[in-house]
Image 1 (cartoon, rainbow, N blue to C red):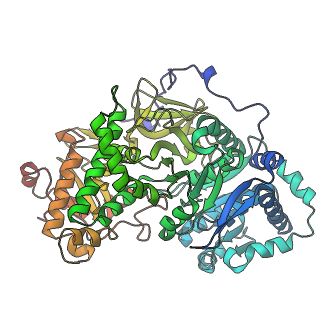
Image 2 (cartoon, helix red, strand yellow; image 1 turned 180 degrees about the vertical axis):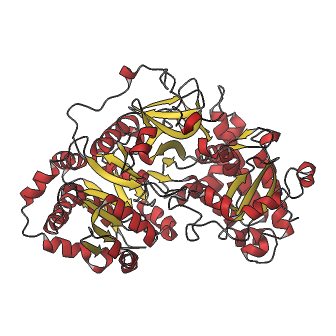
Image 3 (cartoon, rainbow, N blue to C red; image 1 turned 90 degrees about the vertical axis):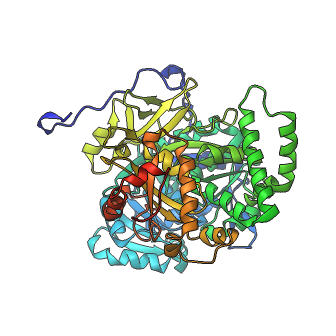
Length: 633
């Protein structure tokens, strides 16, 4: 039904019941004597544990990891903050950071806060236009970049940024220069500025990846971070606050998830490490030996698919697949009243010695937990990893919620869900199935966008735009995004995420975009994974070929047919994929079809590949004759 006079409809109200079956008064609260700001968290840690290790850093692949104490880190933060003050950065000024995940990113972030300023992350892969928009909208005074190549990108738009006073390059000694500039600034000035920020003051502006339109600047406060970290430690003590807890960051620090974790490690006591190049991830994991890791589902898929591929063929491959099935069966049995049978326990011990231990070693050998977010993990992978001894705590959050707003708990993991409300926060689902969030971690608004802020924040609740259900224990299951729901010509509502996530689990598949809005049936665009393709071809006795050739090869298409049929087992026939088209190239960040956080820009894909989508529906007879058909018309 249309909206009369073009008025904006009122949003559906969340239900009045609490997500976890408790009243609002029972929701955990941040202690009254908690620090008021992120610099306050570091000061509190310095008081109680000055000589404890906060971070370990490495000079590069194969180099040893050197501890950095809280005292040493705090001194380096102060020295950099003095440089920022000398550069003319005032409290409230915005400073951009454009770099890969590395020690200097965290150091600079805390220095910006110590100077009373506001950090603005910029993905290191951003284009000149994206840099221009972010820096202009945020009003950035200074930008610190990693390389001269990054500086060249900023230089392309420098004339459009009259408020930008300087660009410093980390790899060219920019931070050393900053320290030298600040030698005459009294340390007392940094102490004064560090104490300025309060709970409601701006800590950072993080620009959303922008799957549609321009990115919006999400304004997060010091209170958002302080509340969420302290409540998170209380709720996830076994994960992040044990004496041996340590984590290696390889996700971009420009993303809110990694940013939250670097702050979390200050009060939790967990040792933090950084690795800027995922090509060195496995040796870095082996050397650092984290007890918990953070990743998006695609990383866990890659680890599994790479391990299967390395098994090769013959007996080795059969043993790997048997061990994987045992792991999944064992994990599923853990959720039954009777638990795993004696026979299954015996098989699990054998599989552990033959295969599972090697997989745990790939994560460093000491990983007890992994936290997965950003997209649904899928039940198969969740059971597989738990079955090999690594408990994946799947969670859910957004930039607007300072990262996690729901997460599975170590004592009760419900695979297939993203857990209950994060400690101290609240979840609700309205009558349309949309998820609403409330708590001290919810952002204060979108920068320079009052209309969008009013639409998102209603009566103390944040309207996420995501769809889900809550079970009797308050555990949330994500079913899709309200803006991505496909309505077929027959009136069937289809959430594409379930099908896309299942199909992406196949080693050949890189990206999937399910289509079918106002069409007679559901179809999909599929791309091949160029990294996994060579090994898959070799293991199946096929000659080497490029992605474009493989996208037309009979054996590849038949394998994808089978993968589609397996994905369809999760949905009704009306929701199932009937035909797919394999695109000759991948969807990547480089060609503009993925955001920096690796989300598909669905609207752009639908626009640019409209002809390929139309071709799916030229002859619909094939859709009725087989579960899926990859053949060109």
